[in-house]
Image (cartoon, rainbow, N blue to C red; front, side, top):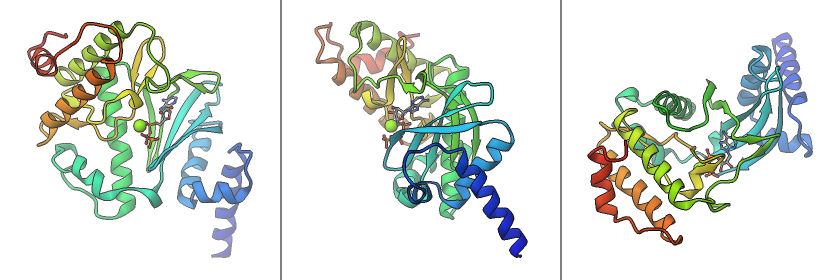
Length: 256
Ligand SMILES: Nc1ncnc2c1ncn2[C@@H]1O[C@H](COP(=O)(O)OP(=O)(O)OP(=O)(O)O)[C@@H](O)[C@H]1O
Ligand SMILES: [Mg+2]
């Protein structure tokens, strides 16, 4: 038994060594629980990751890190934190999705389902040709994806920086919503300037809560997404778009 524990400690230490952080070990312990460290250890061993560098974002439910692959490629690693997870909220999005007909009851099972949902949604969107970070790997509560930005510096979100050509950006986003709807059969369900990055045009991110069209609330989410986008663009001096007309136009295939 103590042999086993020694081996576990050794693995945890190896994983910790590849997490570059300026803070002390106590901080690492509070963010990377034992299971998360073990997942990272496995990803280092499988050569999916070489090193975890700085933290990009600390959100309510997930942290996003800049990491590097053995060949030097930058990637983003989103780590869902079990301790702060809002389980009530996510059940609304998991229920009604035929891909997750059996909703796990254990908290860790739910988080695994949630991370895998984001991976699948990104994959579907990417395959349909929508600009999203390309998903690379998912394991338990960790999601590895394409890094949007350069040299470890993430691209700005549309909340942080206004698009240079707002009318063009709005059209690109409406086309992306349309492609998601008609080709990927998905609704983002949390679309706003906070979940769109600007990197040579808009890139949609944060797709864990995206739902399939069969979901009982998909139409409501679809309308809410479009309301958020149209109201964001009202601050610019560009032609006004009516919400109901835009919803009808996208449903009717006018933005394909
Ligand atoms: N693929 C990526 N490449 C670079 N940066 C990313 C990537 N994905 C996310 N980020 C950065 O991390 C932030 C949070 O990501 P995301 O929206 O997916 O997580 P979240 O759970 O919504 O976090 P929050 O609770 O802060 O909203 C983004 O605003 C962006 O700055
Ligand atoms: Mg977000």
